[in-house]
Length: 508
Image (tube, rainbow, N blue to C red; front, top):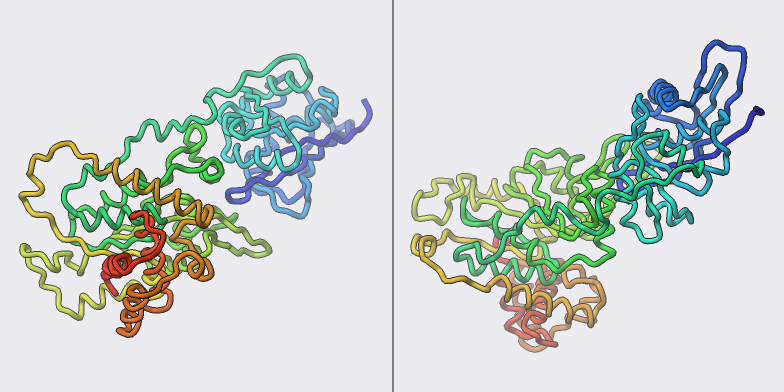
């Protein structure tokens, strides 16, 4: 057998995206007593450690390399490679380079998967991101472990094949056997089917909070809920996910791509908006992303969904301030030495906090004993620029005992709110495309949220009082536009501006 070079297609993950990598394999027989594997192309420790694992897997699968030197080069050589996702293409490169497969058998196929020392394949994250990268490169066939192949099968234009071992993949490449289809049916969100949602009907009283949640769901606005413990702030935040419009097919792919790369594949294409509620002790990198290599944080995992920050003043100040840029741009750029990664972060923020350190300010019993200076200090932990970027802020009171214990008839409040939200979204789509009111730019506000007459007078009066900045006034106009859409009004009227101002009172 002559010396030959074989090229096998694989990928590496870059945060939530995948990048194609070519594994170049070359085997040179010699009089050595053992097989030496030489790796190049900036592999990380996981890939370097795979040499012994791959030798064992090859022997267990019946592929003896013989004495000599096996060269494995990862192209492009100047880009760092990491992760076990390259195990399968490296193993197939070795099989083909040593003469057990013809080189053309592994062409135009993307191989993904971790290989164990017994030759079995193990699932790896990022199957959907890898399939999207394959489509961009014109590759239509993906082979990998069952779970990974199931993710890839969710992408239109991809034919996915599932295998359990290295020997099965080699037999498939040689044309000696067919592989099974992926186990999970693509398009079915198993996680959503298992988890029932929360409805507005489940929440007693809190009419102001329910109105704010309805407006937030209709326009995609940020929301701050202020109230004593147990008033229903967390329930309202969770109900927002159920009220939000269904994900478009493009957004379903986006959400699934993020979850897949993070190892949280929901079992098919995601059909429910993500709901992330990190603890207030979360680090800066845990919230916005970071690390080496860069990995997604909570704001990316909440992409196209809701990020719920409970006990807002308890979060690290630096972590909260890092939210300002992604709240406006819908993405975040993480810079590391020699590399920048842009992560998607188009989330809807919902925050909750107590009105004072003890939590009982405004309650009859127990009585709040926090001095005004401590209340100001507590609320001052949240910066003005961050609050300016949250369109809605409401203060909730404790419901009375009569409301909590009253036997209420079955309510259709949630379904009615969903219909109003759906109709409002349709009006937005006809007027301004896919951009919700909560993300209207200054120019779009001028085009679609013009004010005159009583509306202008109310806004001018609010500006003269000094309680609203220019960004705050824009937020009021966005909320007023959503209220008008909920009322099926083509123009923003004075009542809409008045209600928008009333929904922006807490901490202002």
